[in-house]
Length: 247
Image (cartoon, rainbow, N blue to C red):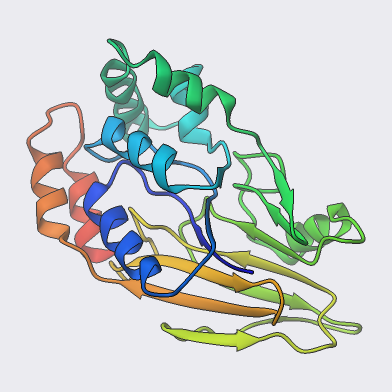
């Protein structure tokens, strides 16, 4: 089975539409989302409707949780975006709120572990070897690869018998993992708000049979999304500017 994994769409319909087009050409069987469907961007209702239709399973991100609960540990700009997003779900959106409330913090399928941040903690970033080892220790015997998001920075780390090494990523390429790979961590990056200096949307694929991980970057209509954000007073212009630079 071949699957696609997306994350951190952040209410960006232009980016998500282009990613779905690209995924449609790859012949995948399922699409998974690792959370943060909403937050930051200008089209939260449209994004949730699209995710409900297109995604096989989705994880609860910290921005999704903030919309259905209360925003905690957010600075001013994301906090204001969350509060605006909550208003968009205030009227006639009970079904979408129920969908967000139903999302799990972790999913295990086909040897995959799907999470947003540090396993079932959607607020913690994976940014050290200690974090990686904590993830590997938390994976079961049948779990081979763990996919996460949250940092908006794509990377793949492979644990072998004697070492832990990053996998070199090249857009549009699939890499077959060696027989010596014991556990794998893959951050799929962000669809709607990349932060690694590349403004193109990011996502990955995984072939459960051939053990191949694919990495993809997709251009989308950034100016349209930026213009939408700038016309919403509650969304800071910084959220538009960073889409252009990808930081």
